[in-house]
Image (spheres, rainbow, N blue to C red):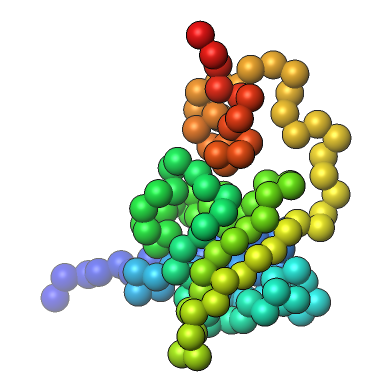
Amino acid sequence: MPFVLLLLAAPVVIEPLGFSVKVADQVVVVSAVVPGSVAAEAGLAEGMVISYVQSPQYLFAQGPLASLSEQDLDTAVTPPHGEPLLMVGATDAGTWLFAMNRTDPRPKNDFPDMSLPPEQIARLSMIQSVGQIPRG
């Protein structure tokens, strides 16, 4: 009998909003919600399936959420300061749109006073990238 190693991914914690997600059976599922958090106030609950993220939009996250790496999934569901997280979730009771904004303190300087390299520009949301793309 061949030995099969099954790796279970650790939950991805979205600390600024107070919830975590994990990939299970090729879907992204809410694995925990911190009581009193932004996510709890928005109505997010453990066991909900996240169908897709409407905002923020990232070029690297155009496919199914469950196919993203842990780092990309974390980025895709963590909104930058000033942008809401708009995501669609599903339960047995129906489909829901969740809107959440960060409440943690915004850094004094979101971006350095210099151009970002292409690999960092590729990880910006569509809104963040305005003004960051070199113009020739």
